[in-house]
Image 1 (cartoon, chains in turn brown, orange):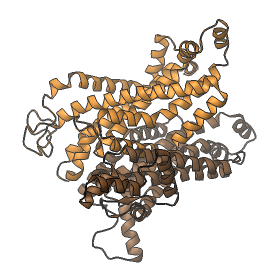
Image 2: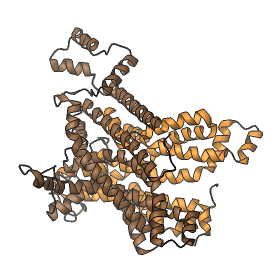
Image 3: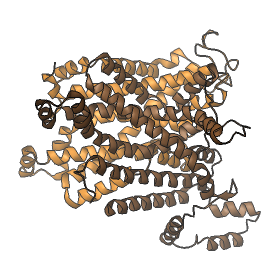
Image 4: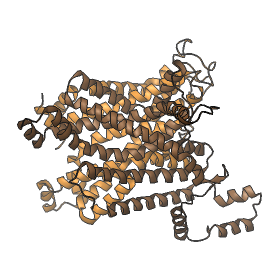
Length: 318
Length: 283
């Protein structure tokens, strides 16, 4: 377990280093931007600023300082929004976690159920239908699906709100408030979930078909174990292993996908923040969002490894 | 497993109905790229008619016009070129990176393998779409920066696949024979082992083109497309704020992406069947 945590930390260090290099590569020297905003651009002032921010030191020293700051959760300052980057991100994190968390649960649940149903009767119409649905959602651009959902369920049918986190101007509290947010969550969450559902359904189906060929399943059949029980506790349980691995990798990617859904639905999460940072070319904020996203992804990967040991007692974390 | 003969390949490929459908769609897209300009001759950036023309109501503008009176069909035709171009080029680049790293790791094993694979795993831990966004934003959107970004986030699965193939293939007798015959290491890697690992790489490549097209369209949707190239993702993105007024601006380019990506995935499955001789025993 310790080595896995160490690996996670190493990945975070790598990401922070990449981030540092990208900041350096970003157009617009931060010092000249600052000097420009202060209304002074004479060489002496710029040189003074460079010293103050340590920009005259060698790159490796600067990297060390940067990593130290990141370790202390100092992600810099957004000059456009006039606020520390970390504060901006912290405000948006709950909305993103609500969106990606619910989408993750939905996609895994539907994906595994559909994949298991399809694998039970290979070649049946149900199998073909599930396969086709999975293929189509797998090929569909996330943002386009989201916009089509808005067209149908908001513009045409007027069933669901297609914009924001809650009804603007509503002062509902308690349960009414939660219900309002839940209604706003339905479409962003489902559109984000459907793509990943397709991934898990395909994986579960393939994995279950593979496990079903194995000797211990034949043994169970020969012993006269009921087919339903074989399906659930023999095949499904073993077939879930690769699905869990994949889910861990995808969960981090889901936050990347959330940039698209949050943009379409004006969902006030990190994804939307990233999109706004893009529009305003606010590089500090953009890279801060990237760093946090990557950190959450690494965390998800670690959690998956933990779940892995629960599903398969044979695996011990070294 | 070397590449099978043409006949048996086609027999197995044709058995997969989805793959045949995918191939037909892909040929249509290729025709669109080649002869599309005859069908829709407008510059996709030019304002050629009234804005917000509904599809099918004005002759010559079958798919309508956008907020600035630009022809949607012309945009889709030009968008097909950029989608396929970026999809194919970035796949080639990530294959180059992935095959190199995977081949070195798999052939030499030991510390080379351990180092390269640790590096690959670390790289895979970074969320790819977020990294692609940041890369393109920092290096300014252009065809080049988009290709670089997509390639950089897409190579790790290739490296892992190729490494696996090389690990098993280098134990085989024909490799030992080549070594005894005094062939150089690069020659063994390139002319002995790589051709034998071609099948799974080809299959993966077709799926990668599909993913690359999705990635490119997502970047363009966010405003990170090459500003000089009309692309499907950009068109959908431009429709976002006028969704209520002009559904057709979003629907048609999205369908184009969906069909192209679907076709590539299906062709990938067909290639998998076609190149897998073991499937011959199956009815």
